[in-house]
Image 1: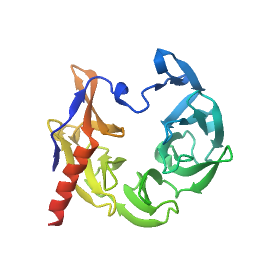
Image 2: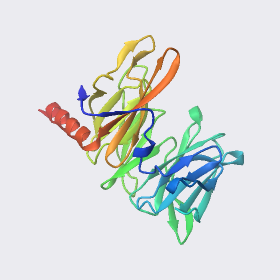
Image 3: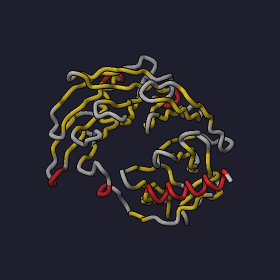
Length: 283
């Protein structure tokens, strides 16, 4: 097991540490809170948003009536650069998830509708217009890109797919059969060599990006997974990445009250631990 011993515990919020800490999402829309002044940038039900690579623009996915997702690109003052409405007839009530690509003018969006499936697209801004330049295979979501590659994930089959970028030609497909009755839930990049994935049971694994091979289980010291009446779980459900750190979310109940705390782990430190474990595996 890869044991993470160096970390910081943050209670109850990580907002001040995030790359997009000036922005908040409410039921009214997306707000800019720079200099403690609230300004509504995008009105409506925000499904997801992210700063562009240069941090000069904001990509925003807004849920419109009749299950239409509108992808909007704005500058940091809220001025609209372009927008594109996307609707998949097979998805009734989709949520949208955004992933940055390697170019400032490109992004990946995936519409997900629970057990009904998912449909991913790659969008490009050209001549002040947004258009779809790549439709991904059904149920495959683009998680991130690195070097000349992109990593796709099919959470319905627990498969990772390594493809070339930007052609999206499949190179390796690997089903992550990790634990019986458990499924892959999310995937993140640690660096250009390693990734980390979580399962529905809250168990974490490191893997090699170039082979998609699982290296070992990852656990944070004092937050190791335990067997209880709910199964084998660490109760660390997700993480939020920044350029330098990964913030793991740990939740628990105490006296029937829900609590959560965030655990900050340095990216470089985690990558070094995974590298040591990977080298041991190859000996």
